[in-house]
Length: 292
Image (cartoon, rainbow, N blue to C red; front, top):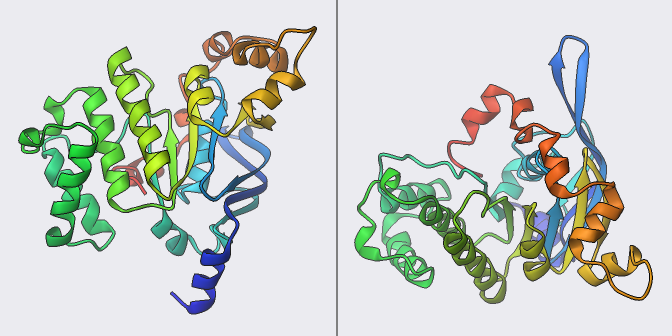
């Protein structure tokens, strides 16, 4: 990497900046659906921004665009001041992603998966092994189980391993796409607490996509509302509540979503596809075997 790019990254005030980003997918011949429509947002260094939206709102496409797995049709994406579309290989070194169904080699153990993930970033075993043990202990994972195949671990434990894999590369920007969806209450709380520890103890900026109001309110500095590919609001939790306040009493975040969209997040989710993966090309899905 040349020195000018390093200086750009070192001095960038924003971890992420999107300007008027749009993305559409072809469903049938001559028919297109927009997953993102003119989305603009900024994520400052060290900030945690949540994106609230029902299934099919475009959250996963947003994460894929930022992580360079998908190229936007229009608009610009900058990560620490570097054009992510023009220079994807450079920005990939600074980001990591955890999705709702984190990809693993399920027959391999958690240790083997973590060692393999580290090697993709040029981290050799002698360096990664002590770091893996340190991270696993910090997330409450029993290191005696590191030899068990991933398929023998619960979904909650697999998500912890996914977060551990992301932490292993010390990413400056973490993209969390529905990391707690489908988990039992205890596992969900464990993963949320781990995200909180990451926020408190690591020099990372975080974009958290979720449809869990409580999760967004507890973990995020600012919260955006994404519906049908459009970012219709972005503010602090208090700012959103004040914006949609009627009368003397502040609304809840659930009330804010209903006032902003005209429906609850549950109703909005039931009217859409399970997620926006239905528009993801097969070749792109194959590339997600190992997360960026």
